[in-house]
Amino acid sequence: MSPPYTVNYESPYLIGLTGGIGSGKTTVARLFEQYGARIIDADEISRDLTMTNGAAIPAVLETFGKSYIDDTGGLNRKTMRELFFTHPDARKKLQGILHPMIFSQIQKQASLATSSPYTLIVAPLLFEAKGYRKWVQRTLVVDCPEALQIERTMRRSGLSELEVKQIMAQQMSRSKRLSLGDDRLENQTDRATLVSKVAALHRRYSALSAIRY
Ligand code: ATP
Image (cartoon, rainbow, N blue to C red; front, top):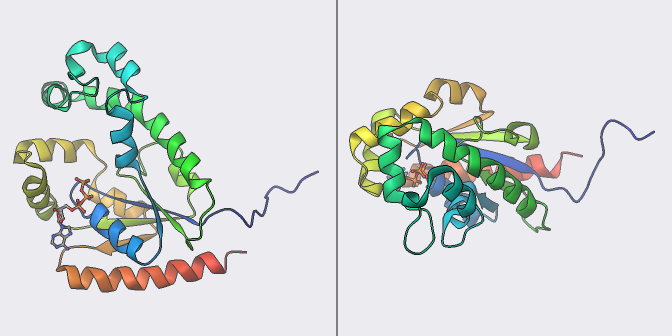
């Protein structure tokens, strides 16, 4: 009989990276990448799935109708955003279509061979969506005060304060997210401070990935 665990020396060390909207997940992931981490980004996969002829488009069309597909055959983000605003449940419906597809794509990418010491799975809904938490070895929460999340997101995306707050209201609370994470990365000061914090975490994760067997 096989043991209850299987040691697979080929398996990558997986760290789930999450945080609320505008907390700095992408910025932090890019810094880790510069140190040699492999990055798999759920948002990027989501964009691929919903672009022209993306794999999720047939299901979006069937669930929401033609008004939510644009002239190029991709997701119409404008009408979908308007729908979210008037029908907040629509966001959950779209997530119900996308999340299983995103997770399976992430798992596929993570199974490819890598020379990186560890792989960061960047997923805004790491704790909310099924599957991630049990699958990764460790989790990192990027965190900053909510007022800063709103300010950064508005500046970057052009969303209104109300729209950002509406998205935040649908995400897990900051305190719950922090209570679930193994590690926390404060991103409320300048970039130079952030760089040194990422460097320290990189050393830690490289060491953890090397001593796990
Ligand atoms: P989203 O959830 O919307 O995808 P995110 O969590 O990936 O956002 P980023 O895109 O990394 O967050 O950051 C949001 C904005 O804040 C970006 O414009 C980024 O350049 C800026 N930003 C992030 N961290 C800092 C920082 N320490 N100092 C200044 N600006 C920052």
